[in-house]
Length: 402
Image (cartoon, rainbow, N blue to C red; front, side):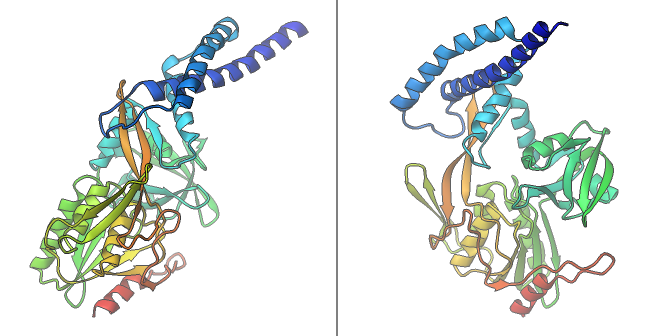
């Protein structure tokens, strides 16, 4: 290959990168604005004149870009992948960590996970303030637990691919796979790198655990607010009531959220009918108030446990109980996710999960980027390896209820 041919090859490669970036932005904008259907949430209003003009300009440019790509690009183009990946990039351009585009396959998987059944290794994940992916907890009895993965392990690689700073939903997609297959995770624990090979299995997630503590105190642990967890919570409370529970601890530590309706259904079991549970404000500054619809079935002293990873739907439940003086809150300040996403269906089965409203506690306290301060601040204490941990937060809850 002579120098001229080399220059032409480099030129084509650079041009291809630039043109594909332009093409994908065009496809993204065009697809987002023109194929959205009103399936999950009503789409109101019309596209602004400025946006229409931009769409027209982009559509016109698209033809020119495609001609150049067809003439000069040396590789093959997976048209569907280009569209999917660039729409994701376009939504990422909103600079909103909670809005995302999902393909039809990803949306189906998301729904399966929300029902508490999936094939994977059985871990709850979140991101710390620096954007690193951290294991909140391995699910009891899961392959992850059996392999030795622990709470507060940082995931840095999945099958050799660096995932630092990657969105948790993307990391979850890489961790999951066919039942019986294996995945290798590189994690950081106590500043040391460790590798774990874990076999993927069908995972059944149970959202609620309950037990009796001393002095007739019932304890309910909610791990997430997936579909059906409010009924699991009701059943758990009835079991405790049958064991003569007179007071209640609700543990929302490490619960990163889920479905808002499930959190409100649980709040409705404890807050008097007609009392405000949640305030939401949409993009048009319209305010909506959600009130309790029934007389409470739980009428006893309650303490709620929270920490930094208590987020979203957890904060809705905490705020509703705290502001209505139905519970004391113990632990550390919550995460501070005070926005709600709605799902819009696209014509090809893909969806756009979009932040559409901000929520506030009944006393109009802002949650987003702020978090909820507990009534009693009790820090979590990490004991050295091999030393039995003492749950000071739970001990404080018991003390308050005695």
